Length: 376
Image (cartoon, rainbow, N blue to C red):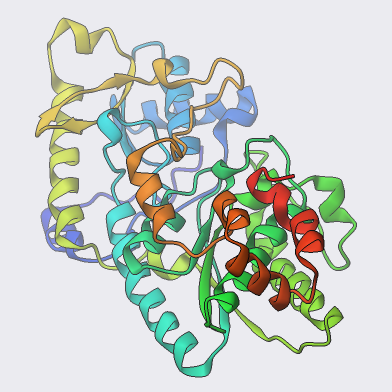
């Protein structure tokens, strides 16, 4: 409810900002939905400022806040939410991107390609953790376009919870297969959201790990340092075999989030901004029935979706769009990865080489890693 920082923006203030990353509005993790008092303060302040049309910009948490503001205003303030998140996890129709995602992927690919070259030159592995709280779109998008050795996302694990051991087994098996194919180097990208699938008690047992939560009840993923956890565990496993293996860890996220937008997003956000205003001012009955809507531009045309229709009935929060691992898009990405597959166990020569790389017998290798791909 603090209006002391309100600034009136004129054309000179905003005429060229579309060319830059970041935000002149800054950001906040304040959650007005946590209490009735906070929400009442928000509504009162907006009314005092004479605001009857509100455009919010952000991801699922901001969309949830927008929905609650629209409800609390009882039609006195119409709300349009513009989908902005590099996670690409808002459920837009026809798999349409959220704005910012394509720029983040583009910049991420440039960075990862450099890491791939350094990996090849120095003959070592890189462990890259890409932003993505729930969904693996960014990790997969960067990894597929760059052609990295392996991408591990939360969606590939069917269980609600996974252990640190299971994630490390997937990565370690990829390293061993790569060795069997004659390469000691590689880059694996891991979606940070895997940390939310890890058993909390399992995490608490790891020395130095403290579980903290933000105002929306999410685990503070940046505080867990997933990359370091995975790196140390895999290095420890190779040390047990008498090998000294150094994995270089790299977190990828903040440098993508405020990058200058690529032409796709430059054009896309103009459509979104225009469409948000058109929705708010429209006299169409179907639009007027919506107190708040997610603004989508599909096939070049405005297609608003009522915010209430985006709620997940199980959680009561905004639904999250996950990576569909049953699509051709995902299958193509997997085909270009070097990772353990079920058919590898039907290839005696490759199987023997992988077992040798792990310093195990074939039977021991099958018992140790077969479960990763459903082989007993």
